[in-house]
Image (cartoon, rainbow, N blue to C red; front, side, top):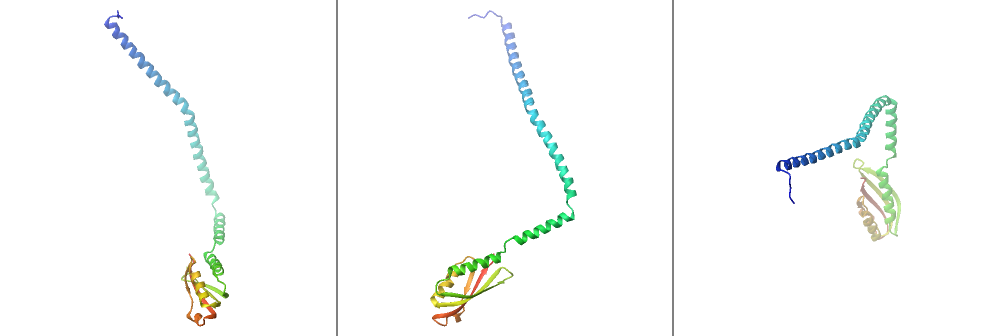
Length: 181
């Protein structure tokens, strides 16, 4: 195929095509920018006005909170905190209850318990319990002592030597030491 246009005209057409391409490209970029601004504008305004509303709301709350805090409210809050402290569980009572449960569960046949007492020692962090009773044999008493030592909070179980004076039908006493925490 022959091209009959002179070279100067061909060059002019090429530059015109380049100009059209760049024009279409810039128009596309411009239209895309305008469309994106149109689409994001409502979101921007919603966020802006919501931010203003929240700032005003926070200012109102700050002003109201200054008016609300008065000595009566503070007194009621301190009373409520004292009530909450009263409702918290006391670990020493829980430990004593667990110790009594453990003694009753681990008590073998042949052991009769006649008395149980306890006291706090070590600045309130330790508990010492005294247990007295009747055992049929020494072996049953030793078995009972070893079972009590297996408890989590029990640190020591002491049996006085006087409890082992007889082989059968012996009166005994135990000292159980444990940690409250």
